[in-house]
Image (cartoon, rainbow, N blue to C red; front, side, top):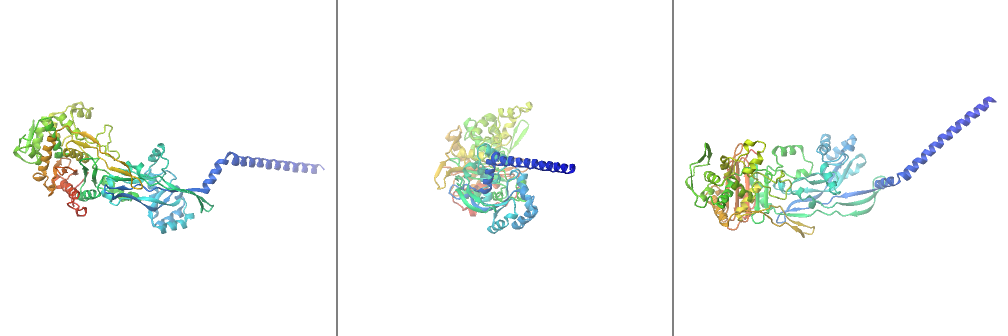
Length: 615
């Protein structure tokens, strides 16, 4: 009996223990259900909806860039793009093999494409990156068939940028690239929430400067999908709004003529409208094709661009000693301060001595070198003497009125890299004190430093664009205009929304008679002096050659404007280490003027087959 009683108690204990366990599990289940239904109810509902309802984003077409005659400089065209999330795809070796087979690339190429954006900091972790662009419809269909075996891979219809003239417009228009982590954070801080990882934005040039105008407003479709990921119905749709159309001041024919005539020389050219400051042409060489950035740029292409420093816009950002092209500005300064006139005559034995230092001239001009002949034949001795009569501070005052050594304010990003808004140098006594403040022994300006500056050497440095504006000011009797590239902003119907108005930045304090004397002397440069290559029949061209000493061969310069009686166009060209302005730079200006005045068609302009070692 005792044994049966103990067995019954043991069974009851087991039943009670089991009941307790079941009760505890039931309470846990109830607590879990409460947590999921009540505490996380709203959050789980949203997650459920997000799994069922998706937003298919439709990127807005980027705005078109037109030249001044309405011809396309940059446009967008719809193309299919294959994207992949590196973190997801790298975990599925089979998926990588399938994708390589579809795209006909090697696994190493795919890995490199996946890693490039991450390595450059151009995409966030977990964000999709472009692995192939401009893919055919058959490739899109193949990816769609195998989508269950390609985790992290997607296809989008995007609008890819196209630059018909490629290298000819590269440094003005710029290029696009994937938005960087830093830029994305800046956009979020500024409230621009429509940017996403993987988006393409302007990286340089006008594409960056006018990003807000060129970038449209994205649209898309809100769709409902089933458990298999198939579309059940479209819940809503928002049309994308294309970016604005920008009509530029550039003339496509002049742009192409400048690029072709520079050939494979290293240098730059800027042509502007004398009476407004509109930039008619701006070319820098070596150049690059901005179309290669739209697709996946090859490492070999990037290495070549880096090696040649092809991204530099030498027209705006690089500065050089202007050499003898500075002499017209010096002549104006001499006339303003009455230290010379049209009858001022010197003898040029081929050199000039100041103390024990010898300053050379490029040739022996002999006696009777007048004002006009000094400019036409580029006599250094005449200008050495003029500079000493003027002094560096009076030279600097007039040169700064021409904009020498100062940022032009052109609508391109990052022209001035300094807080004082300087690009280049126009020295003065105060400038030297500031420049050498840490070395008191070098702060004093010595008279022996002045003659070199008088012929555009020494400390004087300027950009090709500054020289184009300065020579335009000689042509228009003293007005230095702010240069600009954006002429008009148009809506989708071609209606003008806004138009840029010309702005005079500086007025040179000289009389019309002073300018006329210099203009006629520059005309003589072309008709009987060093710039005769630009003597165009029927067109009165005024110009000035220059050879600026530098490490190695001298830089070659030429500046000009035309017609003399009613100037319309001004041009400045530099060829790095081109030796002589008359043979290296002047023919480039001649080609641009031939096209501008209708003497030749752009197709008749050939490339200069000259090899010149560059910067």
